[in-house]
Length: 112
Length: 113
Image 1 (spheres, helix red, strand yellow):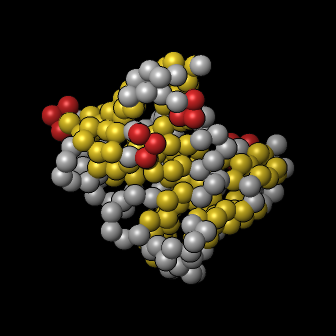
Image 2 (cartoon, chains in turn purple, green):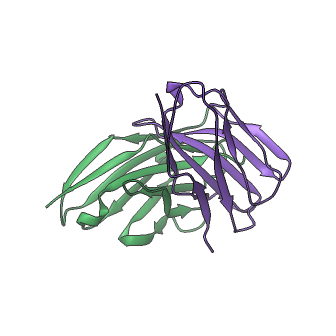
C-alpha cells in the first residue's frame, strides 16, 4: 500500500493564482483531513470529510474549498492565493474505528 | 474547550541522556491520546497511542508514554537518546467527541553528540 500520497511536493504561486493540492489514499479510509502547518503553531484543521460526498469546515477554512467525490481522493482548492496561505499542507486519513490518523508527506506552498 | 499543551517548544539533550517531552490535555471525552513524530521535511508518523487498559504505552524506536488521569498528562520518554531521535514531536487528543484531533504546538528535540 502507498498509504496517503500528496502532489505536488513543492509549489510557488503568485498572489491571486489558483491551484489544487491533490490527496489520495489507498487504505479505504472513510475519514480524510486537510491541515496546514505553520512554524511553532502545530497543525490547524482546514477541512475534513467523513465519507464520499460529505465535507465540513475545520478551524481555518477561509480561502479554501474541498470536494470528496470518491473514497480515495480529497483535493484541496485554493482559489485566490494570498501570502497568508504560505504553509506546509498535510492530508491525513483514518478508518472509522479509533482516532489515529495517517499522514501524507506534505506539500510546501509559497505564495509571493 | 479542548486543549493540548506541550511544555517547551525546544528540548535539548545529550546523546545517551533521558528524553522527557511533556504533554497535558483537557478533555471530558474518554481519553485517546497520541504522540506523533515528524522528521525534517516529512509527514507525521504515529509514535504511540493510548486507548484503554495499561497506562504505560510502548511505541516505536524505544519511546514510551504514561497516561496519568489525575494529572491529565501523557508525557513521552526514552531512556537513552540517539542522534536519530532529533525531530519534532506532537501530542494529540480527540477534539470533544468528534472525528477530529487537536494537536499540541509541538516540541523540537535536539540531540547533542
